[in-house]
Length: 103
Image 1 (tube, one colour):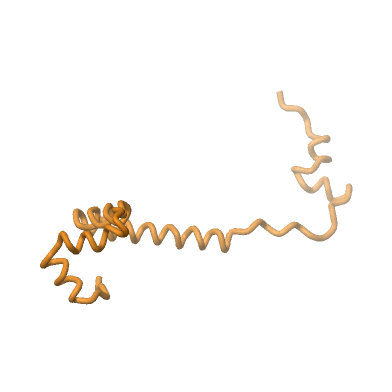
Image 2 (spheres, one colour):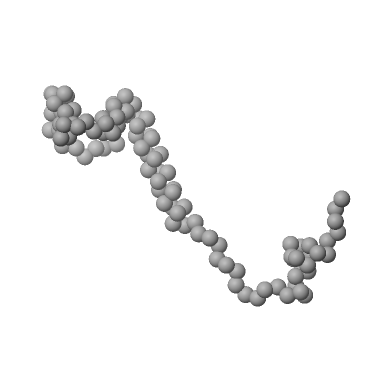
């Protein structure tokens, strides 16, 4: 995985990690716990972090695909069955009325 990062930022982080961490995670005197937890998660297991990130993005893409493409079936158009054709459908009211009771 190629990262587009300024090499000087890598050098700054390597030479003074505490100062870099304070500039990166602390803003206006408040610790950004979300950013810090992501940083710790990545540093403890970079491959697992990337795999989870990929899965998350993939799931979002699938969700968008489903939301975009899943639609209700269009309503049937055309004539309604008449008494002459209703008997052909085993699930019609006429077929139900003419069926024998099963004991």
